Image (cartoon, rainbow, N blue to C red; front, side):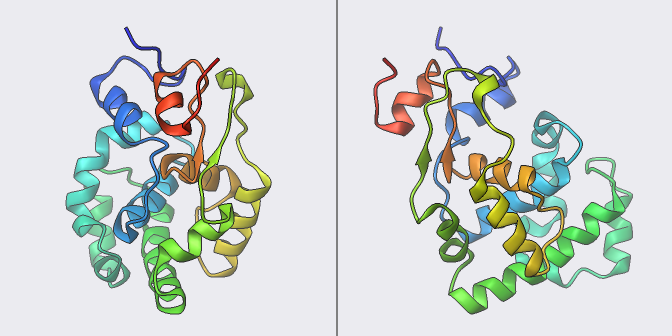
Length: 192
């Protein structure tokens, strides 16, 4: 049996996410937008809760097309708030629309959101060597800088802890612990 990070429970949905997605570098703008919205939706909840609802989010949020989400009006938000398959929080729903608008502005200015967001880690994954889950920080100077910059650009639900979770999810940082089988695969280093 392969050893996984301590946060991964035995549910197949969590194992699949851990084994195939978490910590893998993402450079696709639509996927980056999806993760930004989902990490904001997760605030105050468990990531497991979000993962179980992710497929419904993809349907309800038009495949996370930022142009479509940016145009959502109050009627669409009311429809989303009535959907039991989503996290029904008005502030988080409004933040998704605001974030879509800010996301499009960043794309316009930088050519892609990817080009903008990866600058916070110097364009390459930060590969950590955490011995255990308790060593992994909730935020870092990089996530602090990202949070501050995103808020300045009009993004919401992008505190430093959310930004760090986003960085972990999109492979901007590789935080698999050294005893996890994914550590060697993603870090290019031996666990020794």
